[in-house]
Length: 224
Image (cartoon, rainbow, N blue to C red; front, side, top):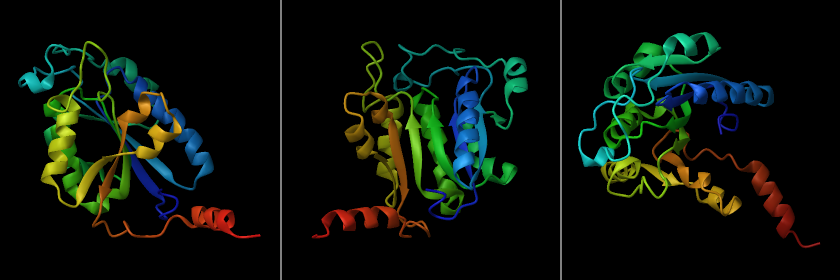
């Protein structure tokens, strides 16, 4: 998407880094992706550094998550990171000051793994920073959408509730399912966790990016 829209640099964000395995995996993928596309990628990891906070109420799923879980060992992780920058603190505050403090490139991808409804809700305020800070369509992964027979994630708690409330409160910005992935990978659980943030009033939202697809379709429908 960044390549098609002529962005030379974008950011990738992980909310909730725990031990840092996700950041290390992201660094590996970024290294491979930048060999293919002429787009440089900055990587940021948001975390308290001290594990999960106390839940606010039932919406944070205290029957499934314990305070203090997923604590980061900064002394072990930091030497292993090559490019990722860690952003420590309360996500509500760090989202408010992120772009000003870090002069980050427009965001093209976000991984949400904060577990709680309240933390995810606060992380979604990052989208209030304005369209210039994001691609017009930004890929967003939510780790706690599908769950299991113990977590029993639903629309009234956790990440699903945070998404629903965001969509209710924003007329021209929506977090929508990526229907193509569930079609392409039937029977897999992970496509259900990937959404697309749409900013319909973004200055580049209507820029045409499907030239290769158009040529493919025109060739397919042409009478020979």
